[in-house]
Image (cartoon, rainbow, N blue to C red; front, top):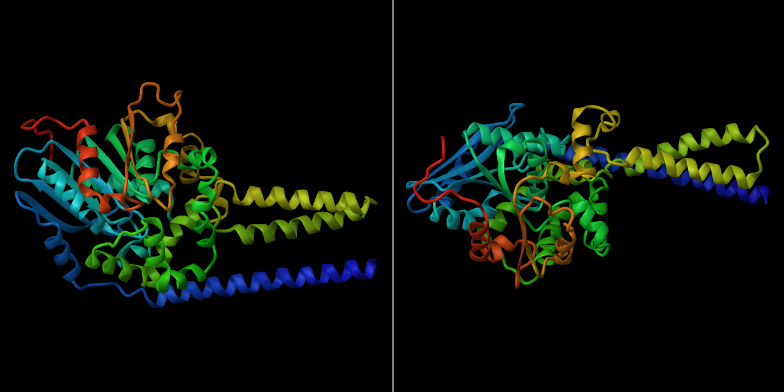
Length: 422
């Protein structure tokens, strides 16, 4: 029995070492591929194409690079109606997508006198991807506020799709005075609690676990992954060829792809799952050796060791927000992110509109019905709009219905009451 136990222990050690080596090699290769592909784009053609795409009748359009608070430049599309402005809307896109996703929706909003501002999220362009590997919700919310302040926007209505929805919620959490309302498309308010109330969502979100692996999801996304996700999340939908090609170019750039996956690896909190477990195993093994000297029985030693592995692994992985190990537990960024994820409703004092596609294959539409309960709705105005025949990219599949839901819900100013400053 002793010989068999020793053999098993030896094989376990070999497997652990092999896992460390493979994980480290894949991670280093991913980093190397990203750095070698990190040549900045200086061609003005993409900006000119955006200018043309967002040029609407009776509206003034500007496309420019706006510096964020740390100096990182991001592209921002700003469209203002030539007549009276009823309100200011900031549109935040998601994954895997870009700012072109709001072309049709913004045209409809502008035609009704609404000014729209559409920033590219940090990491979704080559020029900002270098500064996106340490993203947190706090940083992304600060990015949005930098754009709002750059254009001197007041009485802002935030509309977010996918990751944009989560970031919009964080903006309200940190800067409630700057936002008049929230419109959340495809991801409900407090998505973490919605998952707990609709456990089947775990299956829908299983791709997030795959995204924690180094390099492998990058290679998958560069080949068939992008098309697979769009088809699965919006069944039967055929996106505009020009728009989808622009997204494909982004997702086949290793630098940009690594930056966009950092959203899942850092904010979801599992980016260091395997290293944390291995570290926990090492610590538990050392404690196990110390306990074995105290004359404890084998069964008791094994139980204590497994308990320690589980405890340390959870300690290392629970509520992790940024890639540096120690800053996950201390510092303002970690505190802000943790407070939001644990009690997001504490700072919610604005009307909330949730829009879901009935055929959404990414975030199940039933989860939206469970994102709020009666106690949450005290002193808050909320509404859920379910659009049938559409999936995750509901704003692309049904732009008219999405715009109608937004315009009928949001407390815009009356025509002629221009409360817009620029």
